[in-house]
Length: 133
Image 1 (cartoon, rainbow, N blue to C red):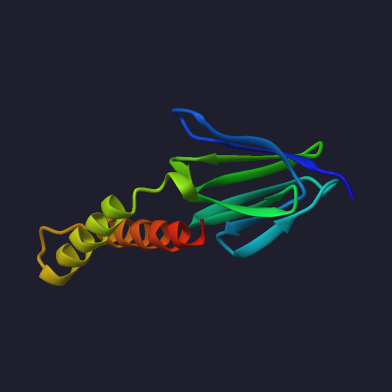
Image 2: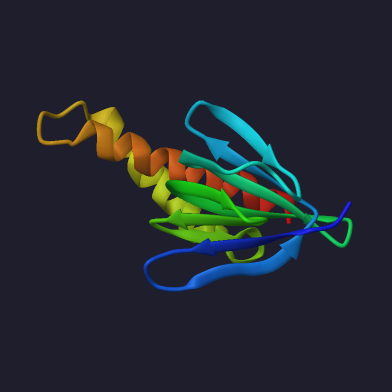
């Protein structure tokens, strides 16, 4: 079946650069899979987990949204932030989750609700992916 090249890039670094058998991305309209020789595609991504398979083993990357571009057998994911599941600091993610829940529970006009909800989503997703490692 072959492979395709996966590149997960943030403004700071390249998180993943490897040949993969397949990838499943968290698209804003729903998850979508990418296999070798996939047709060209551009999609917005939401906060979620990107799953990829290499040498028969599934691995996961936390994605904080961004864009996925498939072209010439290369899947390029541009994300504001991303980290491999095995690199997730669960204690830090748990603290972020608790902070966001506390902010949302306050119901204060000073709270940026959209920001707090996004922070909560990121923390929950990190914790879920950390369990899959």
